[in-house]
Length: 191
Image (cartoon, rainbow, N blue to C red; front, side, top):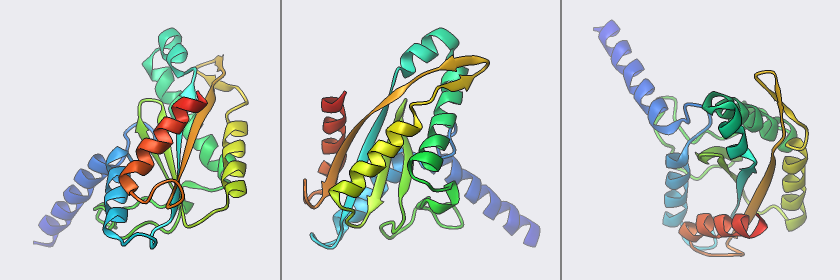
């Protein structure tokens, strides 16, 4: 019976990890970001403050077109690692994965930064609380600087940069659903 329960718990954890983790980078995926925004919507206005940074890798398509999709996947992994380590000055363990020990989605808004792969070559960073504009700009500059050095991808030197859009809750919008749209629009304006 214990072996069966352990196997069942292990399978539940595996299903949840597959559902909420990006297979390429190991980061939380788009579903986690959507869930966080729905949690923030349930909190009364003014109680939830966060900054969202939408990050798009410039030059990514050129890499996949010339070196292939495996090279693109490796670039995503290396870029994510650099953003976390050099851009944020954190480790993966310092970030909020927004899941329980069984891999289920958390039921409270994160209190630590969340870094997720949103789609393709796009990442989303959520900084909970109320960092100042200067602090957010400093993070954006560190992220841009972290990506400025070339990457070694399968014995080829690859250079990419990033376009970033920033939106703040509640300064830019009181609606968490708009936070993602506004940061995405800001990223396209920056691009």
